[in-house]
Image (cartoon, rainbow, N blue to C red; front, side, top):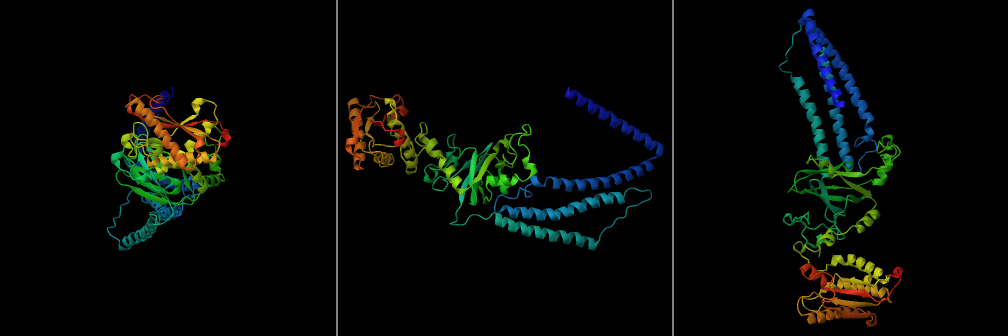
Length: 509
């Protein structure tokens, strides 16, 4: 029905325009062409002046009316240390161009009125005027010089890189259709190296995991955090097409170009909470966030700093929006501790990823904190349980020399955690249970499993754990954890497990 009404309106308007044209032709025939031209010129010139006044008044009124929702004005002053420099530059540019804008429109419509068609009037042509040439050359040159000098100063201030020895946080933003991949450094504070040849479905950034700085790097979820008052250096790149890293409230905007890394340095000076409190003071931000829910949250309550792509990078361009929360250093540190290493959780020692993990079946120093957390929680659950099946805990981070019972050097990380647990909870008794796959002679496998369990007991006693609290046993290939038909299954079967022998209150672990 709506489409039919629109179609009828279009037809009606067309008929009206045709009729107006016919009336104009009849009027011209009655009054004469010259008289019609004179009347039309008079009306056009007069209406032009009216339009000029209405237009300029509307420009200033609309600018005033929307002042609180424009970047740089009202509550939306810059949330970064360098932003004031850019806002000042834009204001100076607006001042000079605004003068030209107003004067040009006044001249345009005034000349159209003053020199409108009149019978007998002839145009006067001025071929050259030295004074006029000097004025319209000298004034723009001076203004341009002022703007260029201020622009260069602003550029040198805003685009200055971090200095050697300076305290800063470096993160990385990689644009792709259609999302941003943001990478944070882990506890070492450094981002690892990348190699585009290593890019795969499992390793989207092509991180080189031979570089130890990559081991603790973090790829957070949708919400990203930044500490207030700390300088942030963003490495910016793209995987496919041109993107643009845009944080409007921080006055950060830099192209993300495939094959050509760029960067931007800025310092957040307002937390998200502080910005919300500033917005709360203005009526524009006390309107409902969702017009369909007038009793719901206000706009200021839902405000967040956002990262957008400021290039038209494809149909899914809109979906590249990410949220940045600016918080205190303490809140940032708490958030960062909750984040997990991408490499350790998604790549390292994961089935089917041997070719992408240069440290396959190796325990790394960076895993110690994760090992401690996992093993402590597992022992706590096993010691507080009455279920026999819940008493066994697999030690995933101890390794032996091939075909032998000698522990490798990197086994100490998990075994030292076990020592700490046993030292803290002196009533806890455990049994070390050795297992193998079914490759080779069954009797030899049984003996090897016993020797490996004994090696673990020997390590624990060498670290001061009383032998009376420890037992060892070997099961060979009799108790598989997975099928021995495939390599992954056989690897899972080659293991040592801790079996908790007595019950300890869960709260004590």
